[in-house]
Length: 465
Image (cartoon, rainbow, N blue to C red; front, side, top):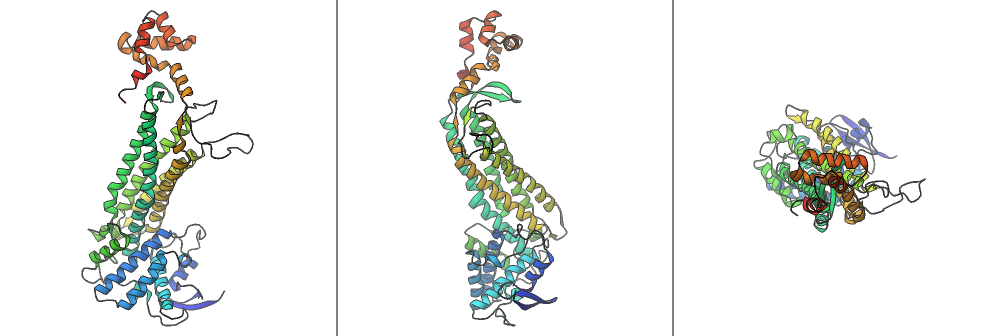
């Protein structure tokens, strides 16, 4: 491979001749050869850096500390990054310094060197028109840029992928709940027969879970909208012009179309990542809900002949390489695996958030890596489950009626007429002797056939619908 020589404060480094990055990026490539093929810094973070670098350049121009010509060049490269044109220039992995300094410098170098080329220069030129530190990183520190990128990336992922995905599944389940509100089925507690409810009532519980989860996520967005930029090294704002923090946040809000604002306290914004922990806690709650929903649906659709078999779900692909005709609840399985992954991600994020020492948390890359992973998994997982499973969900009413008719727990309706102990006697003896509840109730002389039919009616046992 052909190389060129780049320099940083530690000396000369050989960099691929056509790479837009420079010495510090190359050092990181060489020093952190850890899962370089699978754990690269998420593209959402790189895009977020492009927003903040452009905003910083615009703010620096307004403050009189950067020329408009340099700002325009920086902005042009940032636009190219946002368009995905320079993706291959960001090869660094998550496993680097905990402040994300190498990724900040990766962006600084790419912006500076690409700007130099746009301006008519060559990568091999010793002196370049834009400097990574003095121009692209002006009024900034890795300590405030990386957490700013974290919040931008997290917020955008939530509002563009996660919330819409959850909402789509929620709305489908709400429609199904309304459609099947009058289909009476047997309830189950402890995996055992219980009193009746309707299919719609059962589905409405899932809808409520997702409603609460969506509200929990929404409630965390305000904290997540606070940006650390302007705090620089430790939160004091050293080396920033007057008004910089508030002004750069306004620029980021304008560029992204999202309600970002400068953090109320920059020391908290750099040293702690409670906003990330808080929001991921809401994602964890949604994951728990999705685990319950997917598990219920796969058990209720089990069979088709030797299981519960109360729900039909779409047949999407063959389920076995040896058993012809077998079809499995694959969307349920995928969603439960997603839920398990999110729960694991939450542990990492909690550890990272709890280990912010003094003026800087140094678990930033792994926290945002896991956060974005969870947010995308939930959003796209909900869409997949919705489109390939929930939309086609339908009750199998013949099986539902059979289970209702065979249930011993219908005897609960007799409690207020003959008492708990007599009702229990009816159920226990009917089960042992293999008779129906009605036959046993009449045989024991506790009710007449007419009284039984009047009291033990599943339709009257589901409450108001």
